[in-house]
Image (cartoon, rainbow over all chains, first blue to last red; front, side, top):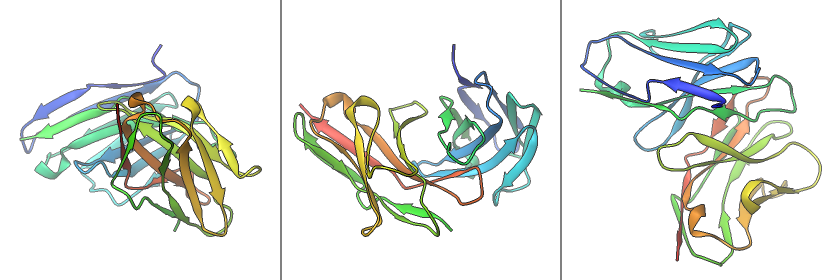
Length: 114
Length: 113
C-alpha cells in the first residue's frame, strides 16, 4: 500500500487553465504539506495543514488554494495557470510532536504549463 | 530563520570509496537536522535525523551523519559507496515552533563503477 499517494502523476495543460492535484495518506498522520520543487530541484514549502486546519501558508500567489476535507486528504487547486507554475509538486505528511519531523513524501505530480 | 547550506552541487566518488556530502546549518536554539534522498522521478525518502544524544547518527542504507556543534555541520557519510547510492541528497532543518522542514539546495551524488 502506498503511504502517501498523489494524483495525477503528470499534468500538461495550457496557460490560463485551472487544475487540481489530489493527495491522500494512509499513515494516520495529523499533518500534511505541499512542497514545490522547481527545475533546479529547489524544494520550498507552500502549505501545511494540521487536522484540517491551515497552519502554514508561505508566500504563495492566491491562485493556489489548498483544501483538506479530512486529515487524510490534502488537495491543491491552482487557478489561471502560468508558465512559472511548471514544477513538481510534492505532498507529504508527518506525525505531530516535537521529536518527529520525519516527512513521508508522495511520488510527486509533475505539472507542465504550455 | 533556520537554514541549511549544501556547498557542493555534485560529489563524485568511485564505488567502494568512502563518501561525504556536506551540510552546515544556521539555527537559533537546538537544531533538529535531517537527511533525505531523492532518486530520479521519485519523492524524497528519509535517511536519518539528529534531535539530541550521540553526535554520530546512523540511518538507512548504511548512511550515517555526524553532528558537530562547534562547526555547525551535519555531514552525511558512508564508509563504502555503491553505484546505487547515486541520487540527490537533501539536508534539512526543522523550523522552530513550526511543523515544517527547510531544505538545502541538494547535492547530487554520482558513484562511478
